[in-house]
Length: 210
Image 1 (cartoon, rainbow, N blue to C red):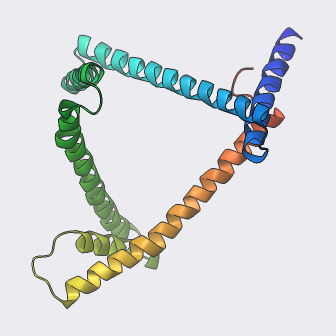
Image 2 (cartoon, rainbow, N blue to C red):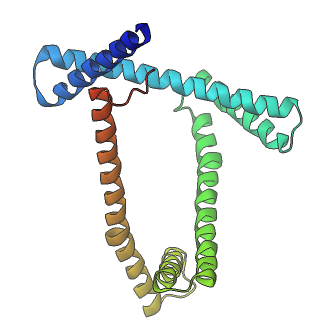
Image 3 (tube, rainbow, N blue to C red):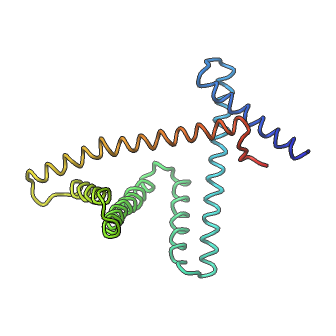
C-alpha cells in the first residue's frame, strides 16, 4: 500500500509539472509562464547533472580498462588524456579561447570528417553485399543512389556535362528525397515523444519509479 501511494505521488507530480509546462506554451499568464520557466531551468540543471554523471562513468569505465591492461587499453588511455586536456583548457581559458578553438578545428573536425567518410564507404560496401545476396530492384536502386551521391559530392577530375548532371542529380536527391525522408523521421520522432509524454502525464508509464 505504501509503495502504491508513493508511486501515485510521483505520478501526480509528473502530471502536474507536465501540465504547467504545456499550459505555458498556450496560455499567456504570468504565473504559469514563471512556473514553466522555473521547471525548464530545473530540467536544464538535471540534464547537466546527468551529463556530468555520464562523463564520470565514461572515465571510470576506461580507467578500469586501462588499469587492468585489457585489450584496447591504449585507446582508453588516449581517450582519458584527450578528455582531461580538453576539460582543463576549456575550464582554464574558456571555450572561446584560441587554444580550445585550435583543438576543435584541427582535431575534432577532422575526426568527424573522417568518420563521415568512413560511413559513406561502409554504406557503399553494404550496398554491394546487399546486391550480391539479394538482387532485386530496391537493392540495385540503393546501390545506384549511393554511387551517384558519392561521385556527385566528391571533386571531379574534369568538368563536363556528365559531371554537371551528376551534381544536379545528387542535389535533387539530397534536397527532395533525402530531406523528405528526414522530415518524415522527425515527424515520427515528434509523434512518439508526444505519445510517450501523454502516457507519462496520464500515469500509464512511470519511468521515474515503481
